[in-house]
Length: 280
Image (cartoon, rainbow, N blue to C red; front, side):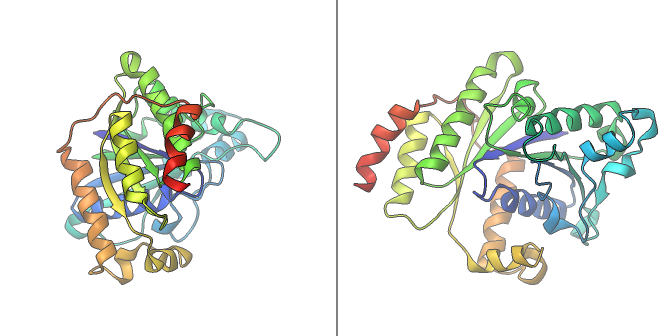
């Protein structure tokens, strides 16, 4: 079983990448488990016709009595039809109400619940995707890296300063836990925003931090419209350019034809000093 994590700042498109990876890999005949690790609990929506009940909500309703919880209480199988008998299973960590708790606690509790219920033993996924908010300052959000669940981390970013700042934070976490948990950085997955010199910025950032760019995905109105309908592009536009881009990324992630690295993160001061000449 292969386990990966997708990190990045909020609204950078992590869930779009995650759901398209899940679909493409399942369409190749694999069994995929996608775990949304965000209090919004919206990671898996484009693969389902209903929202899974967040694991933290189920735990609270059952007074944290794990013996009263079934796998079916927290996991939904996507009703989409995939080629070659592939399948996608979906779960959402959830989180506390705004202002009254730590969002990372939902991630910690959710992952511990998956372990205690032996969910992966029962479902037998070939790939587990953790879709995680890039705020790794909180220990809960860094758990997949810190405790060695995700062997490889990918950062979803753009050339914008805010996105690169979060990327640098994630790199710091990967670097910090490399010896303890064997964490590695697979590379950058770029959702381009149409900035001047954006590809140059990204390539230079990758070189400076000791990683690689796995994909540069241009902005697509088609992807945006499909997401607004709760779909991936594969359902209505399987032969589109966009579908082809996601299939190539899925092949690369599964094949592992690249060398994961231990990155060299940049401080905010270093990042800002380097980034400013590109936009001034």
